[in-house]
Length: 416
Image (cartoon, rainbow, N blue to C red; front, side, top):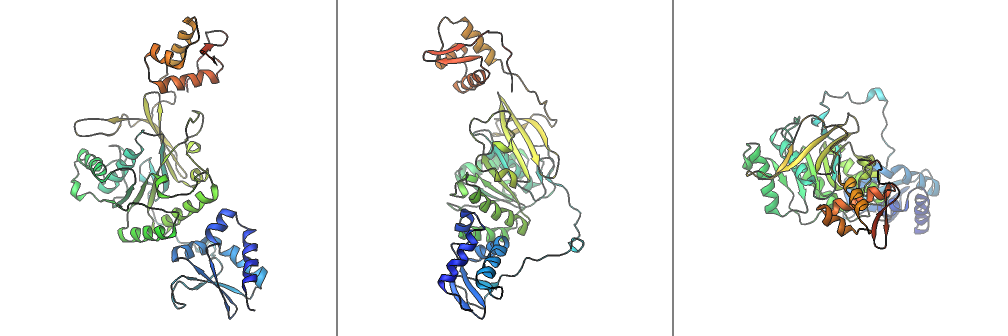
């Protein structure tokens, strides 16, 4: 049976019925129809990484559509643009490989952890938190620990030592060197022998097949124990709130991890104005697919003036919360673990909401935000947070002239 462009368009239409529009536009639309011969439907993919990802994830959808429209005797065949028909890029789409469970590879004895309590062995995950909380410092501490075999944060044992590949998109080369050199010095490690390898490309777009190919080749060449991408938002141009686009990017990273065995850490921000009751993973900015994807999650947050680190894992118990501080000694700034023991769930309470209630109770007129800040001599952000808490509790109200009390002044203050 000869397949013409009209039949090809019908095949595309059938495929689109079984995929989201984002997946279809990303993984099927770029295929070029190259005619048919000898009961084979010929298609051309833009590159080898694209072809492999398409076959690994959507071969079944493509096979069914071709069989339904063109007949079960027609076999899809995908080649790579610029390759000859004899190259490995030209490969018939076969059914997915299947084996009986008892025939699966016998697992080797492996440790659960890459870093005790913090990062699972060969895990993909996220180092998340609000701005200026030390996410990059924590990522670098992890990198230096793995590269040197020294405990992370001076406490958590590293079980696999070797090269770490780092892409730091928001730091200058000199600032990055200074940070890593400081961490090496604190560990008494020779900086010149520290095996942290920095990707110096001006840009990296992992939503593009070309850059995926380059990263694949880089991983194969350097064979790192861990890959750190800091931050996630700088390695793509997708809409992080569109699940299909996010799933495609994360699917590539998961495939990279499984194929190479490299652990992958993404530095990522949390949403603004997150409720204290919201779980750490659900506070991550963008699609919920990111939280579903990760194996390990390190969450940095502030409780008033206390910096707190918590860890979650897919296949192991969580850890923390641990108290940290960004120490500023003469040897250089670094994250410092204040105690290896988890701190109590209920941390230091904040007296500011009660002080605001007292100030409003004593005032003869409504008080503006600026008036409260000047009276209490605290940072504007802290006043805003306390005002938001009191407003949500119905303790105060905002008028055109400022804030006033609602009802009795002796209300219980909930501390989150």
